[in-house]
Structure formats: structure tokens, C-alpha cells
Length: 386
Image (cartoon, rainbow, N blue to C red; front, side, top):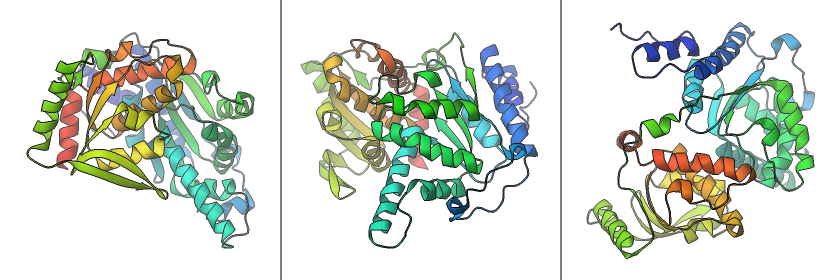
């Protein structure tokens, strides 16, 4: 068998090489999306170098000429169809010096932090610009002219209300957006509060990205599942005993004790921790008013987490369900090893699948399965040793 070529040409050629090697199976839907990503790569390559960015660029609103504007891509489809893999290939190949790939929740947490910092500067008299959005957008564009978002989803009203103004500034400056999502743009923030105020963002998004559906019939995450005993169900004494035994093995004689993580003038309470190992209950993480930034801080602090007593999630636990979805997204994105005791298997935790949460929980269930696989755990082990 011929060695794989260096992946410096296109996403489609990279995909074909992996298929020829037997590492992937041929998938026409993935090849179609690869062609869309390669179109963006081609346009990025022929685009003339961007003018030097300035932190004061928001003052001048220098609009890009049509020839300078590169249309991005928004890929939506069910979980486990290869969207993230294709995004990774594209990002590695993108001929852009200033580029950023992030989980959407992580990016928005950064945006809100920058807005808060600008408002404090205005309060302290360090700037006369009262509106934080233009300078924040300018600083983001100065750092990344290409933004790649995995799992683009909008569940928070604070995010929904700022997206139109933020991306209006970013697109005006020439920012290129690549995004993957479980839902089509028209279904973003579908059941959200004051959704009519969010719809202008959807219209603007459609103008600046091409939209493609990845309709592969195969969930590749399920195919590579080699389940490890890190997800225990149902909730009973035997399960708790098994979880405690795993916890003691992970501690390896270390003493666990309460800890705290500083977060914007308050503390995130960690009931039990030792080095990069922590243990929480579902109540600790999902019954409390925590958000994406809190889960990000936890994922950055600990690489192995034990999560006790995840219940079945009915309509009366909508807020807890949203937090659980964001928690699993964050832990997965950071390669955290997760031990869980739960009242049911992942696909049966959500009692009623309705609206956006139903789509998003399909992703959560798929990720909980993949986080048990030998491949995921090997990836975690490799990350922990680096």
C-alpha cells in the first residue's frame, strides 16, 4: 500500500487518501462537504493579504471590497457523521496566519469577558467608547481573521442578544466563519426567549456562509465504540460501590479534600479533589447556577472527573438539562476522562425530546458513549502525558 501523501493540498484529497488506506470508509456525504470546505480554502488562498489590523479599526469601519470577502460554510447534521473530523482537516490546511478554532460556548465566554473588561475601562475613564461591541469585535478580528466553531448552538439569551451586533462587525471587517452544528440555521435558538430579536442574526449568517447538510446514514462514533466501565447504571448501592472503588484506584493513595476555583470574584466549589482529579455530584454541577465559563475552568483544572447520580431529565429539569449538555460538551472538547453513575443509559436520560434541546441531547448521548471508548481514553492518556 502506498504511503499517505502529505496533507497539504485539499480536504477532499486528504479524505480520499484516508479512505484508500482503509482508515475511513467511503462516504459521499462527507466528500460533498469536503468539496465545500475546499472551495473556502481556494478562495482564502487567492485572497490578497489583509491590511494590517488596528485596535482602533472599529473607529473607521473600513468595509471590505466584494472581491476581498470570502464566504464561509455552515455544516449541520446528526451527531457522529464526521463534521468535527472535516473541520479539523480544514483548519490544519487553512492558509491563514490568524485563525482560531474553538467550541462555541468557549468563544462566547471569552466575548463576555472582553465586554465586561471594556465596560470596566469605560467606568474607570480609560476609554470614551461606551459601546463595547465594536472594539471587542476589532480585537477578536485582530487575533483571528478565520473563526472555526465546532457545535454552534445558541441556548443562552445573553449570547442570542449579542450575536447580531458582534458578527455584523466581524463580517464587515472580513472575518470568515466555518461552523458545524446539529441544527440548521433556521432552528438556532428555536424556543428561546425573545427569539424575534435573534432572527436578524440568522438572516445575516445566511448571507455570509454557504449552508450544507451532512446527511451520512452512519454514526461513526457508535461504530468505533469499545466500551470501558466508566459509565455505571442504574443508580443503586452496587453502582455506588463500583464508583467508589474506581475513585480509590484513581486516587492511588492520595488524599482527596475540598478545593475551590476562582471565577470572577466568586469561587467554584469542588467537593473532593486531588491534583488533577475531582469528584462532583450532578447537584454540584447542574443544580447550581453555573455556566459555560465555569465548566471551562473545571475542564482546564482537572483532566479526570467523577460525576455521581445523574438523574433522568424531564421537562421540570429544563435548566439542569441545558447545564448538563454544556458540561458534557466542555469536558468532551477538552478530552477530560469522565466517570459517571446515572439513572439510565445516555440515550434514555432525556425523558422527552422536544425542540432544540432534543437535537442537542442527541449529541450529548453520543458523546457520553464516545467518552467510554478505548479510542477516546487513549486520546486522554496521550494528552495527560504531554
